[in-house]
Image 1 (cartoon, helix red, strand yellow):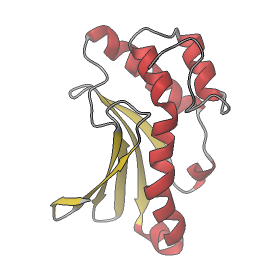
Image 2 (cartoon, rainbow, N blue to C red; image 1 turned 60 degrees about the vertical axis):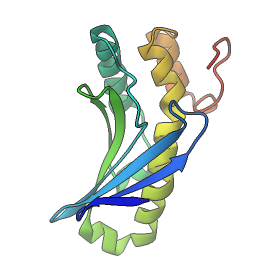
Image 3 (cartoon, rainbow, N blue to C red; image 1 turned 90 degrees about the vertical axis):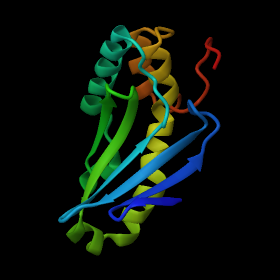
Length: 155
């Protein structure tokens, strides 16, 4: 854990199965809300073609993946085209934080990290053209496959 600025807290967790081996979560304290984002800390997108594929799969994630926690913490996956990383972001208003403190902390420390960890392999393999769009989307919506080894593909 580290604090870079007076309004931002950074947390790291080691997850060997994701690209780069860990996920970072930043929590920014704004005037009316917290903004939390978990990310891989490593560029996934390096070329224009990969950026197009990245934008397509991120759009799919935002339109089709629904989580139980979305009723309180609406998620958006974001492709940072400048740095090539993908984020799982959510905004938590302070009034919700007051009312649902334990749920919010569990969400920040566990669910946001788990969500981006679960989709890592399908995203990376699709962006790097090792999976076609149909295969990637099937893996992303099939919760039995999400986060597990993808048959026929090596890490």
